[in-house]
Image (cartoon, rainbow, N blue to C red):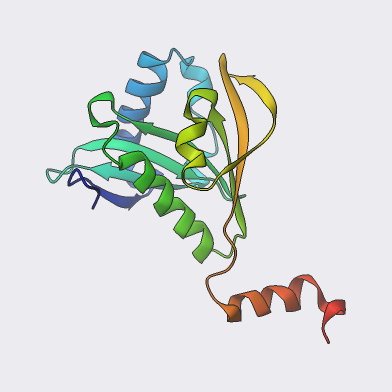
Length: 164
């Protein structure tokens, strides 16, 4: 639960696309002016999604984790911003990435949100660039391993010639 009483729950595009679309349409298309044809893509069905829901199960936020470890489409309805929901969703996806064995996650942050992600440990890399008409910067968070056994498995499979 976030401090606001909102729960962050796993979501599947197949089952929850209407709720995901409602939040993203309100935030990205209507509020920020992202062209509709640029908002929806083939990555949604293969991504892992998080939904922030009220006790009545109304969606108020959403985010996704792409298979290659990119977090994106982080959106919170305006009246729920500043309550910890965005951070809770990103944290949920970082934890998921870690359990999937990823050692880092990345995202393209709107320039105005760099501080938000930096407070969670993300580091900006490279120059600012335009995406869907909005200034962005690439950010990366190295998340390491869940435990020493996972680290050892990684060392043994990624660097078989380095074993001693």
